[in-house]
Image (cartoon, rainbow, N blue to C red; front, side):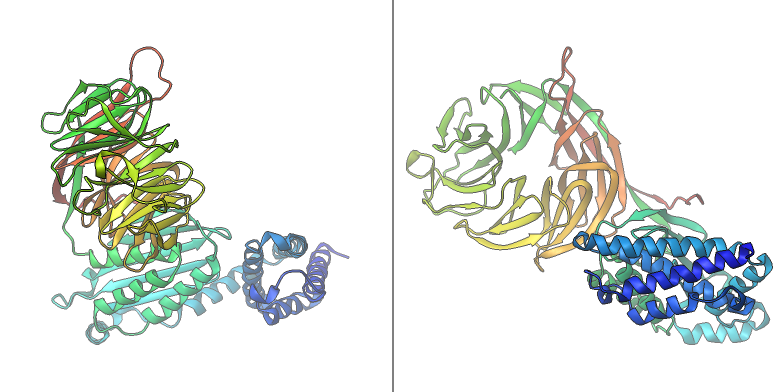
Length: 584
């Protein structure tokens, strides 16, 4: 037996073994992951004797090889409860795939290249050189509307070329173009390259943060088929992308958003850039929380010491101590009696300072670590302010200062939102509490109205407008649609950044901060970072004040000379010519 017969014999044996495993009964619902008829056809096609492998069969075999690759990737995403059967089938598929690759190396190189070229031609379809028929091409561009496409789809590649027809200029050479290439590297990793007018807009490797890679690829293929029909207006094409973004998973939204932004902005000559610069630093103990207080910002450290920051001058000056130990949350406001109220969250519970803020006036009777405080627009006249506290163990309580004392508004005015609470926010008449990977919406009676599941744990959040909530955490910034009451999209994702804080800037942008000390501005609609800077110390939070930004944090266990713990930042928005991207 020669080497060729040996290798192709192994392929035949491997195909027979895979078919036997798939048809012998398993503890996984194979029909939910693969088409059994296609699997049987694949095994039958590969179960050939060595002498029957002819050069004219190579095209079919190459397609089968991609099908086998796809099968292996699908099975790797199967539930771990079926690990035994999955491992056996995967092992057989891997062995078959490896034997098939070895067998290919025994074929003549020129035959293999000819087969690959023929498959590529089939994908490309019939075409004619535009230079040979300029008048016909011009007529076609007028009748085709504003979008002309070329699309190529295979199991491991998606390629899409778009051209925006400029009706005012009949010269085909200057038509605007967008090119998207998506290459599948593994079951959950894709390389994406998007370019416009030969300039690269985005190039990188994306790892899916959720399951469903094959479903997304199928959605994109359907999109390509729709795009290859004639569109009367570019708006129709953008509408298809929006529909895909609303219905698809994170990966399809990412691609659709890139395409939508690029295609709409091809004629853009200028871009908005935000410059963030450090105005002043504050050195001292770590700052755990900060709260706007009139025209100033109150900062409180890990030992209960406090400072007052003036956004106008950028100065941060010491003031009297507010507590004898760490303060984890603070909220300052004026009540209906025009009294100044400062609520602080400590290890021992909720404490209230009034008027001159020099002494603790009230303290809650419940001992718990309070890590978040908000003041929603509730309460009848005489309540002297409404305060809602959230404890680390997931309990949210509503408090009142009526009758000159701090008390829960009723014995039932609390809710257990989870095992651990991270933060809270106010949206209209509702309080939103974040617990692990769930957002809990509460009414004035502390009853749960609804919950929203998010894909990652929430570290911080802020309401951008009545319909939009931005949340962040380790490796992600996410948009939640408050009107629809559901997770909407992943704005950005990172393998190495831990986003610790977000704060609304305007209706289409927000500030963000990372634990490593990077502070930036991101556009909500596109997910584009408009500008950033590094403050040089570990970050815990940010507070906005007009065109100024206060970033605070610092090292908890800093020894020796006091380190940086806060900084005022200036924010300036500029419009400049679009910079050309460099081909990677």
